[in-house]
Length: 301
Image 1 (cartoon, helix red, strand yellow):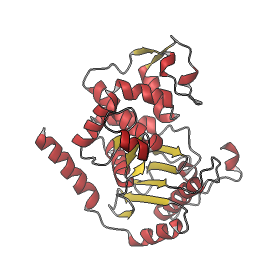
Image 2 (cartoon, rainbow, N blue to C red):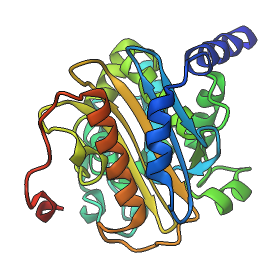
Image 3 (tube, rainbow, N blue to C red):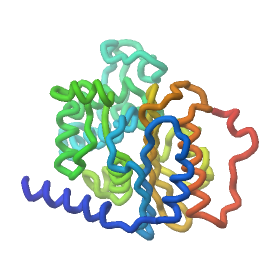
Image 4 (spheres, one colour):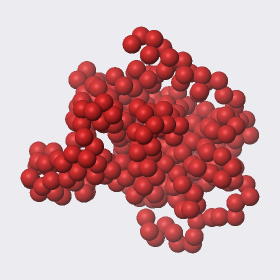
């Protein structure tokens, strides 16, 4: 066990900290962040060239709903070990309800649903009721955090409903991470190195079906595949995206905290920042692209 942990930690260190900085892109992103009323962190890596941008990339931030990526990993860990059947049928109970606009939360007590659909809802529509159900089925945050630690992710943790994490929950909410670790976790999924190649592929397929596509994804052509997960709470907005771009994949994660703007409109400063960064990166990595969002596309969001 000890040597397994050391192997994964060395692999994570090798794959992230040994990269060269893209100084031109760093300057452009620093300019984009100027004047932001809050704390923002950005991590970018071009998976073809290995060049990176790191701005507060190792600072701890709230995950909000991005924590659902580690939760889905915890579920697939149990599935891959044969402890849970991916195609099993679950029975919904009212006690599972997390108040909000969740699809699963609209179910009646005693209704049945396939586990695979619950896991899909957790990622694609960010269903909180589904997510908390999966967190419990995965062995709670304790088991998920054990996987993260074992695989070299020192900062990414589930806090909510996890014994011993109460102080962290008060400070960061449901979960905590850094822009670098969240981006590299998604990269590892893309490379087929999470749980198993088949589990990684299933996770990635769910992550390219995101319903919430009004921020970073709205600045990427709809015909270009991108895997993503977004998060939002009052003082924080976040998104991690891996773009399967024509000239090579790139991954980025933007997270904010301590935002002055706590509004819940598309004009929220954090949402605007997500769109600006995504648009800048697409144009930077695909300079010959003539695509831009259609006029009045914001009407759909």
